[in-house]
Structure formats: C-alpha cells, structure tokens
Image (cartoon, rainbow, N blue to C red; front, side, top):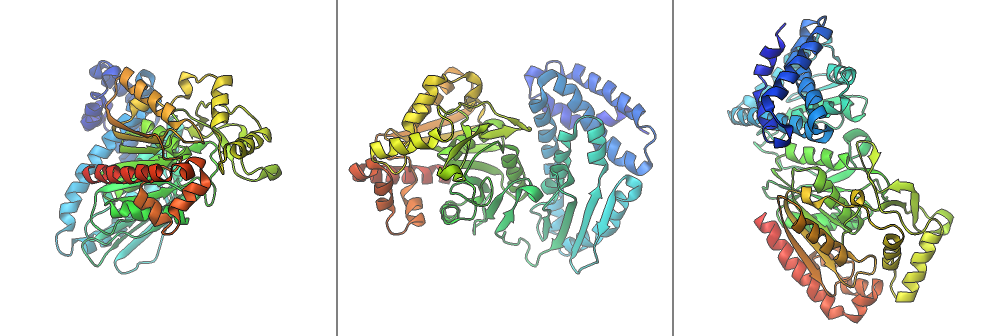
Length: 514
C-alpha cells in the first residue's frame, strides 16, 4: 500500500488547480492537511482488496481527502469546482492521446476488442464492482455496472456529491473519439439503477451526431439534442417553448443550428412549462454531455422565465461562456404551476422557489397574491390593458410588498464570458428593462470577469426574438401573432418589427464571433 505522501505526489494537477483560488490561502498548508486526512482514510480502509485499492488509492481517496479539506476552507461549491476542473484538465490530456491513437488505421476496432478483457479485470467483483455483461457483437461492447465502490466509498466518506465527477470523466475521455462512439444514458451516481456503457466502432472516422432524447430519471436532465449538420465546437443550451421537442423548440433549434451551434433543448418535463424547484444540476449535466461530445464552447439562451434561469445557471456553472437572456428578471422568481387547478390556468407554488441547487430551494421574490387571487389579478390586468396576458402590475406590487433582498438577486457578477441582456420598455409581463438596468448597475459596482451588452428597446413587447427565428416558428402570421398577443405589438407594429430585425442582426453577429 502506498503512503499518503506518495499518492498525493501523483496528484499535482489538483494542487495546481487550487492555486487558481487565492481565497484558499497557503496551498502548501492545505496540501499538508489533505495528506493528513488521506493518511487517516488509508488507515481506516487498510483491509481493502488489491483490486479495490487500485481505484481507492488512485482516484477515490486522494480526491475525497483534498475535497473534504478544501470544503472547510473555501466552501463546498468552490471545493467541488476545484476537483471537477482538475479532473477535466487531466481527462483532456488523456483524450488528446487517445484521439491520436484512434487515427491509426484499425485502432478503433482493436480498442473495442480490448474493452472486454480490460473491463472484466478492472471492474471485476474483486475490485468491488457488480456487473452485467452482454453478448459480444461485432464492433461493439456493452456492459452495465450495478454496484460501484466509487458510490459506496464516497458515501461512507461523507462526500457522495463528488461521485458524479468520476462518472463524467468517462464522457470526457471517451466521448468524440475518431472512429468510435461512446454512449451512456444513466449512472448510479445520478440516481439510476445502473451505469450503462456502450462503445462501438463507426464506419467513418467521425460519425455525424444524431438527434437524441434525454430524460431526468436516466440522464439527469430532460431535453433533446439537435446536432448541427456542419462541424462545430459550439454547444448552445436552449430553453424555449413548453417542451424540448415541441414546434417552438424544434424551430428555435434549427435557427441556432443555422448559426453554427449544436443545440441541447431543455425543459422541466414533457409538456410542462411550470417552474418549481427546477434543479440547476440538470443544466450542469447537459453541459457535461456537450463537452463530452466535442463542444468546447458552451452557451445558454432563455426567454421570459427561462431568461432568468439562463442567468442563474450561468452564475453557477462557469463552463458557460455565452449567456443570452431575453426579457429576463434580475431575481429568482417564486415557483409556479400551469395545471388549471380550480379552472385557473396558472397558480403560484406552495411557497416554492422556481429553482433549486443541491436539493435546496433558491431564495426567491414571493408573488403578491396567492391562489386563486394570483390568476384573477393577471386576468383583470390583461383585460384592462388590452393584452392577451399582462402581469407587470402584479410584479411591481410583489416588490412593493416585499422589497427585493440581496439573497434573491441573481449574482450576475459571477457569470463568465459574454452576457447579452435583451428587453423592451413596453413589456407588459414585467418591467424587464428596469431589471436589466439593475443588473448593469450591479456589474458596474462589483468585480466581474464578463463582457456584457444590454440591448434595450422602446418597443418590442415580451417577444424580443430575432425576426428570422420568429418567422421560422411562424412562417405565416408571425407579425399578426405579436399584434394579437400584445397591445404594443398592434399599436407599434413597425417599431416592434424593427426591434426584432435589429436583434436578429446583432445576435447573428455575436454567435458568428463567439
């Protein structure tokens, strides 16, 4: 058995990642504490078999020791980011070597053939795994892991939240290799009943990616992947429409495909536009999938409520380097349902946030009204203002009754890369331009690492979509829809069209330069 010092000597890439966080303090002292923690763990698990030791000493224990040490110093979220980023960097080096190997003629076939004996040794019962192996198929190897020492030991050490990092490493290493297709739809660490593995050769050196469906139970998020037909390293997470495969989502994805982006359309569930305690980890899982399939650049776009979600997600996950928020709020909204309860189309949640992270609801601005008064007020405002739907007065009243608190505001200063805020002054759902101005003021007052642009228009309604995207959604009658939905769309038809045309031009340029 190796000593703690010997094990950590081979983990200098984690130490290098810690140096990127000055708030951690003396890195050498942290490393010394992690070594002491690792020594304790090694003594605690001195009776592991030789096969289990390979995984425990090589991966599980050193990561846990560093993570548990860092968590007490810089907090859980940053400590997790250190381990994840270090793993991603190390996996990128391995992936690069494998990529070169797979370009050698015949190597992909040899690689697949080697998986059988290798996995049956490395992931055997003697190594603490329980498996299900499938019959051999030419050019393909499949297996399921039913029980895993990574899950068991991480749970025993009190850091089970770290386990998905190791699952994601497989995607990082084996995803998008020439001549190979690696796929996995579920993992134990994300709540499924198994980790399924499939690796197979493809006829061409690089097989074109195909449309794929994902569900929250098996994959950790609900969505549909729409690949770009041309080669690209850009992946855009898109949240438009009631479902990730409805007409609005499909046409929105096509528009983004035309701008040179792979698209992961996401939604809360199938045909569910309600938002209540939506786990932000689902966005993280989608990011991991995209990065594992050749997307070096990750963007996110959302409109209306999902404009808020896009900003919130980008403030948590720093792999996102382009954030586009159409008609967003600058605070976390209270959760809501669209389930026609008591004949009301929409109702507020039962004191629920719209978003959650690590199983906890994010602090939110509570609505001014409860069910059924909530929807009654929206209907009254809509009728009085001449809009199909209007709730701006309700949101203003919500802030009057409950002045916005710091913990409820989206921490836009944490967002990396480029941010595009888009809104119109005549938005009748909420005062989005005021919210955008507050986010600008916040960015001006606080240190940040982003470049941001605020595209605010006098007229444009709540539907500040690029004109060519809206036309793709509604080839006939797109302008009529805006006029029917919103009074401003009817009274300022020409100005609203000019706004959408301008957004179209500018957003296409942003995506081209990204």
